[in-house]
Image (cartoon, rainbow, N blue to C red; front, side, top):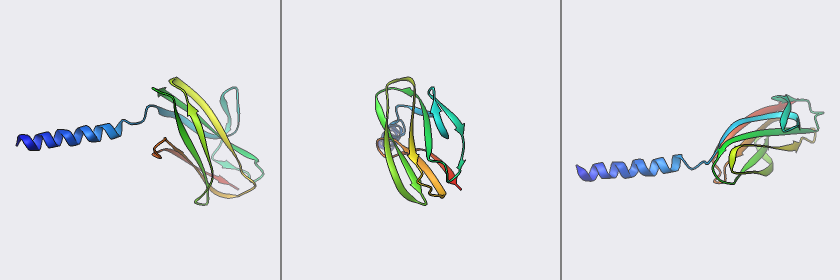
Length: 128
């Protein structure tokens, strides 16, 4: 019985370790027309095909060490751009990136991932 209990605790410890790998949380992730004064302008989930750029604004909190995230811009299930964003250690970090749309209308998706490729956030949007 003691061996089984030991095995159980070993499994729980290993599982707990993999669940706490992220050293921050994303408190806000929105798409918008622009970023001014470190804040998103005109948050949207649908854009005109005449829109030149779509911005992704991110706010992360509780960053325990300097790290990076990757942003994947996906159009009709095909990745069009991958961008990395640095997050610096601290209570809060705001950052943004953008994608030129090149008048590609249809279904878009933005995936935000950690350094190990774990999906942190997904945002779907349309270009009409």
